[in-house]
Length: 172
Image (cartoon, rainbow, N blue to C red; front, side):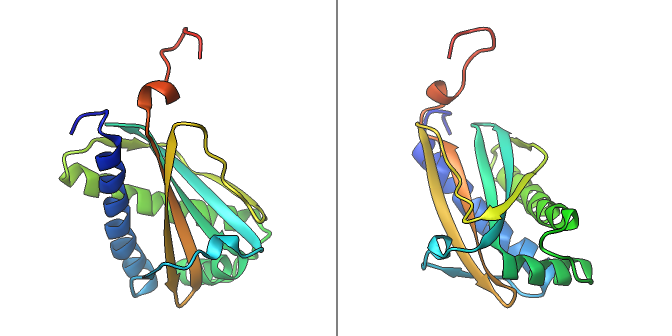
């Protein structure tokens, strides 16, 4: 796959994320989540957002966004004990969930002959958290529901790699 074929790349990454969500969340929570078309991201609420960037065939990022009630339920199932939403431990839990999923995505992409190295997760908490993307970025929204509640992922790929990346020491 050429590095400039970003539409195909975005589709392959999205399929890899979907497959990895099913495998990872089933192993952690006992059943895979259900894909939903409804966009829960518009509902106002407190949220956690965990972002991992990937480098390799092309740069891209994966963001897990979890509303407060879902985060609390997921944390209980994942850790076996209550984790308050406003604690630093909740950031660790959501970051680790994203990290575990990202590891599965990297393995899935490797099976598809796509190299990807991941960063550490960056986690944010706030009300109505909105992820802002730069020009030249294409975002795919993947919504899910589970017994723990609804959550979603955003897969952001570079639709114009040359525009988003620059050689060190050159002007942007």
